[in-house]
Length: 92
Image (cartoon, rainbow, N blue to C red):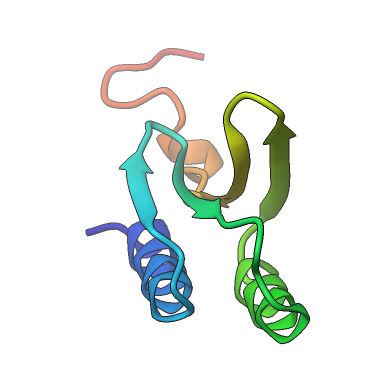
């Protein structure tokens, strides 16, 4: 598992411990964590949840009247160094 995957898994575990159902997805350049947020989440729980997602590179809340509230967090994967960008056989 990549370093971003480990960080995302830790975020997901802490959100789950706070009672939020989560899902984690690996992408090429980042790993995402999404959690469904109930309407009745207490203020103390919000503080804890915000502390957790603050460990991500980006986070936000998507709220709609149709789908409820989804908290999301993105953890970027390590960017390759300049010498690795082209890969084997890359000519400059």
